[in-house]
Image (cartoon, rainbow, N blue to C red; front, side, top):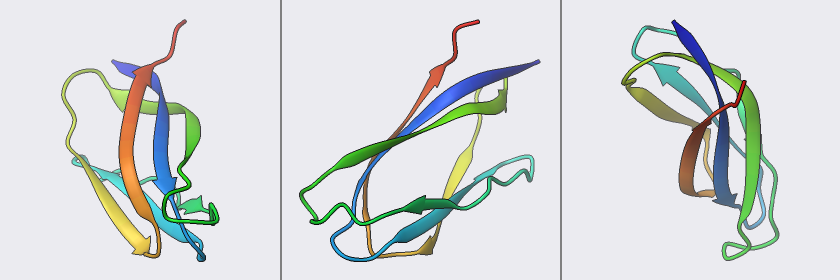
Length: 82
């Protein structure tokens, strides 16, 4: 069974755009997620990706930084209401 989640990612980026993707233990990989400049390392913003599909149960998710230059505060998965 699969469930859909909203993924909130809180970050800051002083001058450059960062990029990452997520890899799940089963080999699936997300598209690149871009993080535009927030104007300062203490200016935090949150982006939300809607409809992320994951199998029910515990998952191991790897965060892969494709291009640095940003700070990551947290990732928050919340199950979408039907």
